[in-house]
Length: 561
Image 1 (cartoon, rainbow, N blue to C red):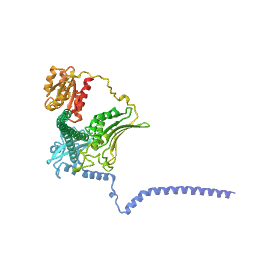
Image 2 (tube, one colour):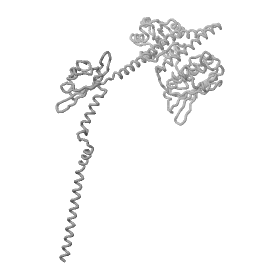
Image 3 (cartoon, rainbow, N blue to C red):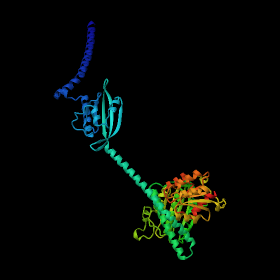
Image 4 (tube, rainbow, N blue to C red):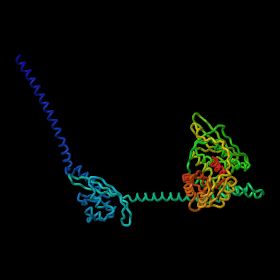
């Protein structure tokens, strides 16, 4: 029994001894593995026969990189200590300022100030507090070369109270040169455009002024002469003058479009009214060519927001082309309206029975100075810009133009306006004939015109209807207003001498308690001229050549209102 107990106790003791021995052995093994990691690295280095002194340290790598950047930078860099002594400067700094390779004589900031007083200054240096950043541009003359430089100051604390300064110089002369070239080119282009506008305005004035007399007097001759030969001659003079004016108007319109001088003034108009007015104005012109001319419009108003004057110009050009290319048959002007859901399409078409246009040639007729028949063998007159102007005008008033045509079957040009359904009825001005005519013979009108021919023409146009007083200059007009009270003044704005028509109106307003109605006449074409006149106090603006019917309607409209 005792023996068995002893054996059990021995086995237990042996188990405890084995347990503690294994635990101790595992701990020693782990400690040995941890300790041998640096030893393995060391052995690896030793086995490679490499000294630990040759391993690059991070700080030294950074220093080498900074030095390389400093030397190879395209920016000129110079380093100063707090006392203004130069610590280092790179090659780019020497190249930008054309310094010699040996800069041993340049020791202090003051040395640089002496060499380049426009670039550096002691004032800038002394006012610098080393706690901010400063930058400025400088133009410098070096060896007869102009350089444009930008100087940047960077200041920072090195250690403790010690500070350092970095001055960085960049040369942007090449970019400045490009900038100056662009500015000069822009100014030159603007000057050329301004000169072109002035030339066109002067050309317009110089052509319109004599054309006013030619068209006016030849028109009067057509009405007064009785001999067939004289009638025919007057007719040819009149038609030739009108052809020249149409060409001039087209050239000026194209010039205004190219120079972007064409203003857009939108308002809601009744398309029926506009088209009918164009129809009546062109009726005599079309029928004179022995062509049938009809106009078809809806029975209800067709309101649309657009620039009425531009639409009229488009229709006049299309009608002029239709007459030119139609020898027999007729021309048909039509307005139509299509409504789908909430969308509305307004269509205006000009159709003729003329020569027609092939599908191939339809691609070129809207190009500038292009015609179906070109060269010395062309069959029809014109300079080939009418449809170019029409297309550009259509773009301005958001209209799409299309053509349907074939040779010998006529042509149909259609303007298409897309519009949302809306109530425009309150915007359309109703024209009534409820006004009764008054005795206009008593109305006194002052006509200020320096051109003798134009004065005589206006006299023939208006003398039967109004009491006229004529003045050839602004001074004559002012003397006339001293003793007379005029109901209306018809003033040419270019009187050949000072004061001009606009200045004259200002003088009349100053001396008149109740200034008369003033209508400006001019042969200049620019839209800015019209605006200038209206801003100066004119009630209306009319361009030359003057048309008798339009002039009478305009004056009557003001005097009867």
